[in-house]
Image 1 (cartoon, helix red, strand yellow):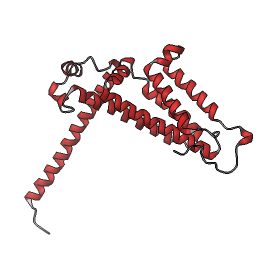
Image 2 (spheres, one colour):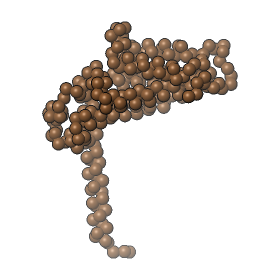
Image 3 (cartoon, one colour):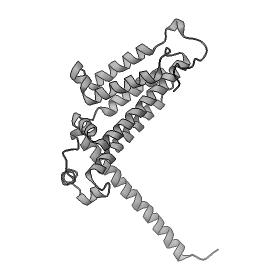
Image 4 (cartoon, helix red, strand yellow):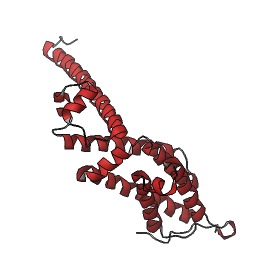
Length: 225
């Protein structure tokens, strides 16, 4: 049996302590990001100063500086955190179904649910800030690509009629943006949830292939790019 090496033993203890400490720090950081996300979603963020945010969260200003070096960087971080969580939640729900028709419906329903907490103040502040708007636009493009992939799959399987997948996806993306900004609700009187439900029915009804025309073999989408 080899002799106990006190240096190696202490190093192992320090490693475990350091790992535990990092987990605690990361846990506190994640909790703080969640609280900032909820505050921003409810009230927007443009009008807050760092001092006001620290007071609302009952933390020190220096604690906020551990997340970001400025208010704008903090806004970008929190908006990114929100979209990352929303994207992960939507992906989990979509992954539970294999039928492409159901995937489109569930994707839109999950997107509506993820956006439900976002106040008009948050949407307007996000759109007015070039840095946060870039994050929003990046996620909107990703959503359009996701819808586009479902449409292509549905056309290949003969579930959807032959359509220009990119055009339909862009139309859906623009409509989602209009719902988020409040334009659709203002013009139609629909709530966001009602607007998303109507969009889902309209999209799936318009894409559905005629039963008598559904081919037995796999079809290719009209548009591949």
